[in-house]
Image (cartoon, rainbow, N blue to C red; front, side, top):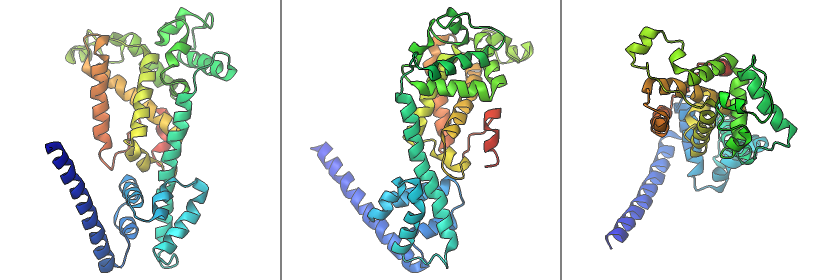
Length: 326
């Protein structure tokens, strides 16, 4: 009975607050002569703050046109904005900036949804050793990470040298499908020096670029390494869940002036890979069994960063240089 009453009170509060909010919006429109979309665009700076407010306003609107505008095809955005302006009785000649601002926001909103679909497609596609393209990507990963060490055969224990679990990496891609391979190859190809350094440190943590004095100061003389490729696939899972949950909206809406793309996602993976490596060294785990604890602590730190609407995950690698001035 108590549970039922609690649920009833929550439902009543929800509808009460919703009613109050609609009343407040009505009063604000009468006082300012502007609809909510206008007030957001004119009073909120471009980026995640504005786009997320616009997205919430459109999604929570009682108008079907506004509700569906967040999921239209990119080619239909311009027409959708014209329809919104007409519905809200806004003269585009008097308010030209509003159309431009709404278009930028909708490109990001629709682009984020499409990016989830693209990433999901790669995640669901299994690695196929009979597919020449898949095999070529895998061999390139080796070449970028171990350019001075020829791979003796496709099935080889050498794969363990870059962090796979057995002599055939295809079995390690089951969880994340091709997405894991795409991300690893992107990191190795676009920021080869950094990827090779992370790989080397993961194999020999005591031989990192930190001096012996720095290691001793940070009590890292017993630093534990990890499997580079397996961790890369695990960090791919982290990036995927941040994307699907909507947590990465803050980052993408701040760094992508239009629609975020697969390249933006892969650059984010590179950032997470680099940051996790530094975090692992700082945590100085006793053994690899502490991986889940360290990963969860790292996940919470990233989530906390992304809760700030001004957050744009800072690049520390060549792969993201093109994002800085976007």
